[in-house]
Length: 55
Image (cartoon, rainbow, N blue to C red):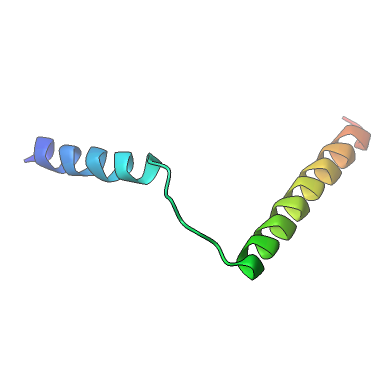
């Protein structure tokens, strides 16, 4: 029984790992670009703040 559940879980995980060919509209692409840039800037800011904090 657990082998069956494990097999299903592994198949599900493998399906999630496959690259998906999703076409984004221009507005969605722009939003994604902005979101990615914001995430990058946040990571840089957090790294800089962590560097400044005394141990």
